Length: 109
Image (tube, rainbow, N blue to C red; front, side, top):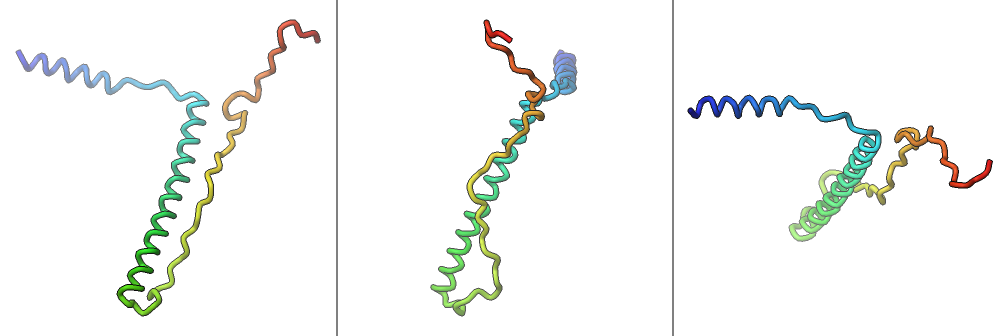
């Protein structure tokens, strides 16, 4: 009794796994690109903050342990990514460039 029920559930799960989602719209693609851009900037900020923290730890170690006063190897300076600047998406990319303005109600030509 359990084997046919299990086979039915397994078949239904296989059919659900084969279902396809609709293609994303231009607005969804633009929103995904903006989110990806923002995440890349956030990653750069996180790396910058980590670099600063590592520099503080190294400076403390050199100061407290007497590591010769200088690091043994020249390390690159931490690079600040600056404030977030959103990428401007062209109106053509989202499908609004070809749209014509709608005249106001009662407007004369």
